[in-house]
Image (tube, rainbow, N blue to C red; front, side, top):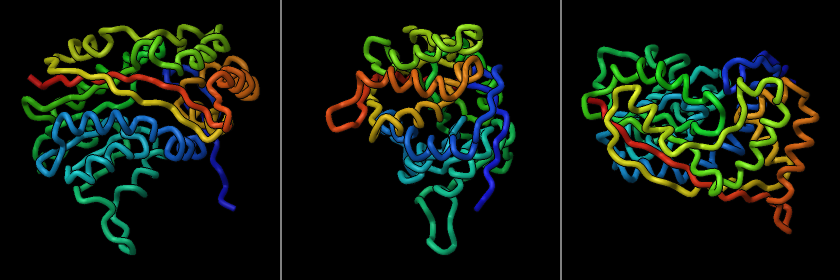
Amino acid sequence: MTPTLVREHLSHAGSVPVRVDQYARARDWSEIQERMLVPLYEAVYERLEVGPATRLLGLRCGSGLALLMAASRGAAVTGVDACPERLALARERLLPDPARGPRARGAARLVDGGPSDAADPRTPAYTVVTVFEPIGCLAGDAEGLGELLADALPLAGRGAAVVLAGWGPPERCATSSVLRVATKLADPLRSAGSWRPARRDDLEEVAQRAGLKPDGSGRVACPFGYAGLDSAVRGLLSTGLFDAAVAATDRKQVDKELTEALHPHRRPDGTVWMPNVFRYLIARVR
């Protein structure tokens, strides 16, 4: 049996240490949660006409599903992520396996670290930069984007598209009621990672601070659908949005209250279904 490494992990808000099984979490993200955002990826790629002429830099690329979709369109993709466990799964998806042949039509490169680690003076500038990790559901969840973009934009050409994503209005996101569980349980740590409703100009504010020029936006329906309550709990916990709650209470308590919050979204066949709307902004490098 392969030993499982359990390491201390900083929460989504970046300040709450939580001991989690990073390998199990990365696998849950890859197998359960990541696919929920496929409609968002598709809408953006269609709008930008991502294809063989595209050089795409995916920031916080996770386990690489969005990169795989772009590469399948013929784009040359580079993914950057600071989570080695998720990046290992991205490598399984994207990098050629001599026994099976190439996984996708476009070239792929994966980098463990930050955007500066992806710099290569021998390659052309990127034409598309994506940050598909949605903001707008935790206090302070946009704070790290400025530094991330500051490192990435020198790698992009003038006029390159930069894509930011965020949660839609809470009244159109059924998952909002479930995310409030994190705030209730993490009360002593509310400033670190409490739920807050998405604001209309969240993405525009990030773009403005980064010196980008907004060039259109859109909304996409991204329902969260799960085979059952256990799958839903595992998928939601894999996002890191409940880390502050786990730190303030314990995993068992979070599982219990999360399961209770999911019951209204359970259908007669046992599946869990939560309609959501996500928003994206396309901005341009000046």
